[in-house]
Every structure is written in structure tokens, then in C-alpha cells.
Image 1 (cartoon, rainbow, N blue to C red):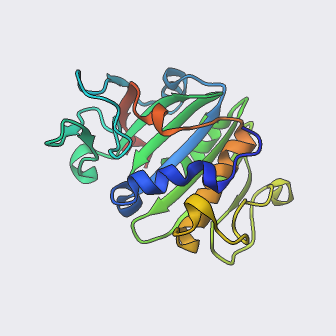
Image 2 (cartoon, rainbow, N blue to C red):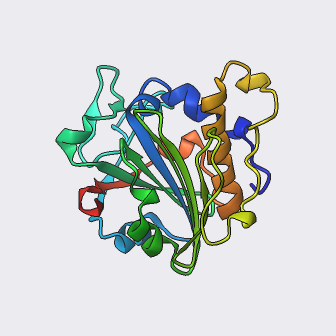
Length: 221
């Protein structure tokens, strides 16, 4: 939705605050491409992944982010060790395109990945690492349009940083679902909402509980 706000993505911090928020992640929104097309552009052989048979979608786990997901005692997939699995990445069909989710990585912000994925379309990547580094990168037609560091006092950069809309929620007082979210985390949620606004691709927790393509992003580094 064009008017997405940080509140629309409060679920991401709530559900993955003890997993992806700790290990780090990269969410890359790609307009108009299928998961198969997105993986083909960056040379990732995709392996279909389906939730374990007989289990209901669980928004509290991080399903499908590796080609061989570990299954917790509860029967739900959990995030694996990144080093052991060679930079796991998954591609999920979302409203208006595809979202790539990488556990512990930053592939969506890399120059060559951005160039390939955004050719003829637009992409937006939000990266948070385990040491609290963060980055937002918006690209169109193979070129980085603008980027910034969510929640940090740095100036936007890129070919046309003035084209980047203001992130939602950076200055506003949090309320409702965001009342207990720390400002630094709120800035990341605002960046995810901004990724939706600039690409038109909408992600919900239900998308992350559905079948995905999985693979390794190791060759992209």
C-alpha cells in the first residue's frame, strides 16, 4: 500500500525480535518479479520449501529462509546457523512482486546485486546487522537512486537522494503497537514501510509462512 507506515510492520519486530533482529537480516523488495525471476537474476539456484505438513503457519518463527530448514521441537522451522549454511536466502511471493529475506546478510544492498535486481524495475533493501549497523538502499533501472542509514544522523546519498520520501515514524511519538518499540528499532520498521511505499510491494507475516524458494547467497559476496 502506498501509505504504509511503521505500524504496518510492527509484526516483524514483534515476531522476529529474538531471532532475525539479533542475527541481522536483509529484506529486499522487488517490484513485478516472481521469486523464480528474482533468484535467476542473481544466480541463486532455488529449492522449493514448504511449511512442515500438518502444521499451521507460525508467525513467531522465521520459516523458509534456508534450503534445509531446521525444525524446532514445536514443529516449526527456525533460523539456522548462517556460517554452517552458507548465507541462506529465501524468495517469497508478496503483493506486487517478491521479497528476498537473508538471515545475517546484506546481499540486497550490494552494488552488483542491486544492479541486477533493479534492471527494468525498482527495488528497496533494508539491512540490519548483528552489530546494529543499518542501511536502506532504493534503486531503479540498475542504478542506486538513494540510500540512508535508518535512525542515524547521516545524510542520504545516491544519484538522486532528494527523490527519497521521508521515512515514516522517525520523528513522531510512537503509539499503539509501537508504544514499546525503541527509537532505533522504530527507525528500521519505518525503513521497511518506506521500502513498500517506493516499490509498491507489500509484505505481511502470512507471506513468510507460505512456500518459498530457498538457496545460498554466498557467491554474491
